[in-house]
Length: 103
Image (cartoon, rainbow, N blue to C red; front, side, top):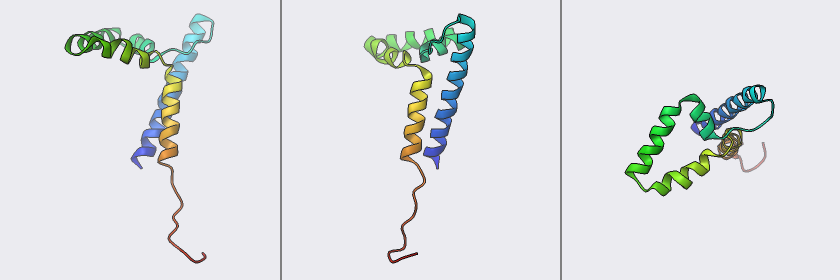
């Protein structure tokens, strides 16, 4: 149950990212899928910079760049959509096979 809820939440996030991409398309005049880092920076650039500085300062800088930045360059639609579909497939309802002989 929790896995399916998480899957549908990921699908909803993918649709929200698609809406943000559509709005950016209207502004720019071209269709480009925005990465997660670009979406995060558009919503709150200060927190994006603060998290990057904190991860680089208090751990190995390689964790942030190229580690986390590689994930943040992925389009949100693709990442959340694939994760959502994966969760929905893994946690799908399965038919019960309690009966051995007939219906």
